[in-house]
Image 1: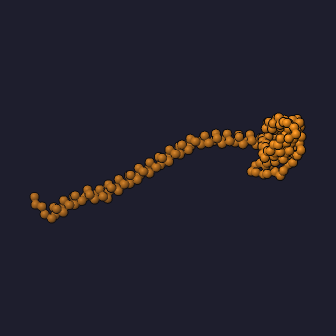
Image 2: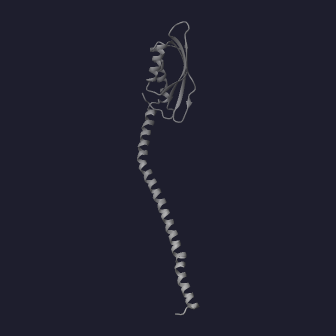
Image 3: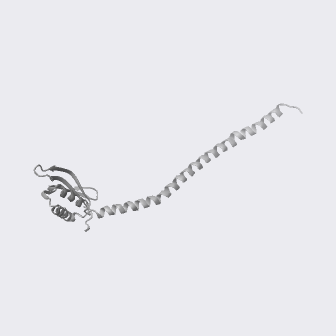
Length: 182
């Protein structure tokens, strides 16, 4: 067999076919396959995150229900604005029952907030320290939300166990929804 230019050209063409096939067919197909594999892996990871989020939705629903119950509980502790006088009357009765002298009982300007308001009351009482302590315990037991702030106690220099207390009692009430809680 004689090897001439035609045969060498034919052998070169035969060798170029697999190289060309690899460059223009197999290599791009392999790269495309790898990209598709990466896309599939990313979508599977998203699906796993979505499944975890979906599982927590039930937990979130239960948490929302629990928080809604807590909000309704605290709202039930907020009297309507027209009921403030009842709470003031209860505080006065508690002070009288403990034989505390009320020197000052002054309602200050209400402070509105989102959904509720705070009614501060400035009080000055005079009497036995143990009675004042009992007064604080009884106020704490009131069925409404109250807070004592800015409290100062001064001992009576003339009598042992007797003191003067100055404090601000805040009563929280519902200014949006007038209701009749008792």
